[in-house]
Structure formats: structure tokens, C-alpha cells
Amino acid sequence: MIALAAVALLFAGAFVKGILGLGLPMIAIPGLTLLVGLPQALAICVLPVALANAWQVWQFRKTRVDLHMLAGFVTAGAVGVAIGSWLLVKVPPAVLEMALATMLILYLGLHLRRSRPLLPPATARQIAPGVGIAAGLLHGATGIAGPIGITFFHSMRLPRPEFIFATGVMFLCFATVQLPLLQATGILGSPALATGLLGLPAVAAGLTLGHAAARRIDARMFDRLVLVVLTWTALTLLWRAAREVGMV
Image 1 (cartoon, rainbow, N blue to C red):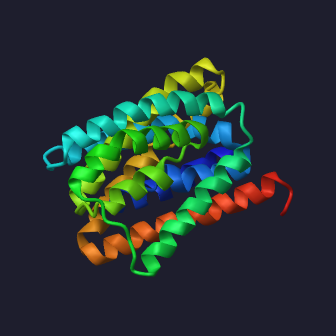
Image 2 (cartoon, one colour):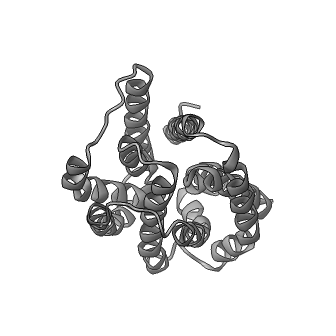
């Protein structure tokens, strides 16, 4: 039952990722957490996330992105992942989830008020390491770097190819650092690894279908779909936090 649910969630996340360049961990991890808890959800998803993003980074390797900014972001983010993986077993998940959801809701509120922040390239380059370490910390602790990382790249208003490449590099680097840390802490065991491997064909199918569907999506629709995924993530985080403190 859990394996079938994992495959279905990985397919759904990969399909959205094929369209937007994001969505696999942000859709699969919240759903799996309701079934097996956050640590095991991270363990199941870490390998599919790494491989899916490796594929998209290769697919969009010819795009032009500020590599200086991106290198500062992911280098600092790797440090954050290490710290976050330690916090995973030390800090109540509800605390992190509530903080993430609050930040996302504030960002979405600014966008709806047409006050969406715009980061000029020079500013983005300057703050990239600080944002990267925060995104990495949250990825290590919750498996979801999107509330900070994707918000950062979204605020730069990158076109779809550049956006997918940047987010793909982020998720690939973070998952690569996270995988041995989950093994070292004993969270990534054989059952979780086997479930993740079982879901790889579904991930490949989802990415392929999502990429084909993306051809019908213009820039305005792309922007709206990113906001839909961010909204889904915020609501799911709130639900998870409420469950963990006994409110529902």
C-alpha cells in the first residue's frame, strides 16, 4: 500500500516538475509524510529527487544563468543541508513547518497585492550565499527547499529554461549532499531505498509527460502554476504542523 502510494506521488510530483522544473519533493514529501512520517518520506524521495534533477540539469545545460550567483547559492546551501540534517532529529518538525508556511503565505500575499519583489541580478548575487544556506538548512530538515530556494529564483523572474536549470542545480546538489547524511544517521535503510528505486520508472514517465505538456504553457501560465505549487506546499505544511501538535 505504501509502495503504491509512493509511486503515485512520485509520478504526480515528476509530472509537475516536467512542466515547471519543481514539484517532485514539494508534492511527494508532504503526501508521504502523512503515511510514514517525515524522516522516511525524505529517505524514499532522496534518490528519485537527485536523478530527476540530474536529468533536467542536463536537459537545460545550454541555458544562460549567472553561474557566479548559482555557485555561491549551492555552495552555502550544502553547508545548510548538513546542519538541517542534524536538526531533523533534534527540532520538532512542526516548528519548522509552521515557519515555512508563514513565510510562503506572506510571499503569496505580496504577489496577490501586485507587490511581488523583484531581485536585480547584482542584488541576487550578493544575497545568494545567505539565501542558499537557509534553503539548504530547510532542505536538510524537511526535504523541501522550495519555500526559500524557489521563492528566491521566482523573485528574479527567470524565464522557464533558466528557472528550471537553476532549481535543478539546487535540488541536485542538495539531494547529493543529503543522501550520505541520511545513510549515516540510519534514516535511509533498505526498505526506503527499495521504495525509491521502485518509483524511478514513474518519475521518468512523469517527467516525460510533463515536459511534453509544457509546450502548451506560456510565460503567464507558467508563473501562475508556480504559485499554485507554492500554495499547495504552504497549505500542506500547515496541515502537517497542525497534526503534529494535535490540533486536527
